[in-house]
Image (tube, rainbow, N blue to C red):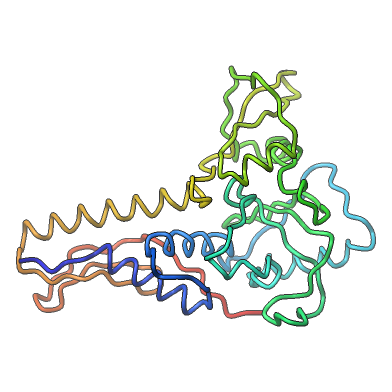
Length: 287
């Protein structure tokens, strides 16, 4: 009888990365732990050098301009974004960052000194920089105050559409039957509801429905993209298990990861069944 458990191997590898990174999480629900570790990995992004782009007509107050420039320069050179995120970002058992899960938008603090009680982070600031952190670019949306309504402002998704429309999924023949406020959008999000938004297109002089591409919130509060990634990988590995079992019922193949390369190997039979990429862990060396 086969003793292959590739999904379990995958979960153990991801959980090991989570512990190595210093994340706090319960292993009672391993699938949720893995999904949230994948979310954190996506949030901190790669250490690639990145180009900084600002949304059109963005205004950074003079007293924050130099600090914003210094932080963005550091991040664009591959610096670790973690110290600038919420101090709760490493605790995966609490409510997750719903703005990031819904819209892929991050908020970072602008402190200069280490946090008094949590030295892994910088000091907290009332003003926050909202940005999109891609593999090759940092896209800056603006400076917002630490208020609950800031997280769900319609102007954010309008800015994304105006500046980077490729990140938006448009429904050009659809309009919302009923409008809702930023405050209502925030309450929908807190209830883990994915909502369709509206933007105005200047060229066509039309308003139509949109969603952030590949984004949205699952009923658990997790990002749909991370749940889907986990499900897709599990389905792939289950399929690989079946193929290996048919080929060699006695195989004891295991899944391994090294520097972003994943492989399924049976060292007893000296057989490599598969080599490819699944998830690239963003391991940071720190500032």
